[in-house]
Length: 173
Image: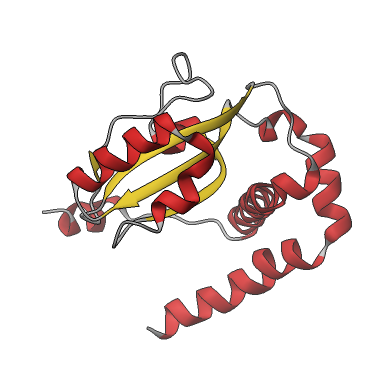
């Protein structure tokens, strides 16, 4: 346990704090690695959750007939809710070749035992580059991974590890 706490403290000092506190280095990392932060095909989507499949089917049908009334209709269903956001199509398991504006996906049961369907409001092409603010979380994670690799390489160079192969063979049996 104490070794884990020590490793956590050192990682915080050598990787996480450095990345989080150096906004100039983060922006430079973003500018130097823009190709890593291309937004894949995405869409503005309304994700609708219902308590059962009958509710979902009914709500989807009303959605088709009166698209602008979805907020009002949603209030008529106990246990139904919706969230709207821009999603990468892959995150919703939507086929980027067939997803189109105005599309309503089939209703499906999710692991949370709610019935879900998506209404695609608007689609965006895959070539739309993220700006720094949109990519900041990804930039931070990518930069931290690079700092960690750099730090581990420096440790390997400074501290050579030799494994006693005969003892190692006894451990694996």
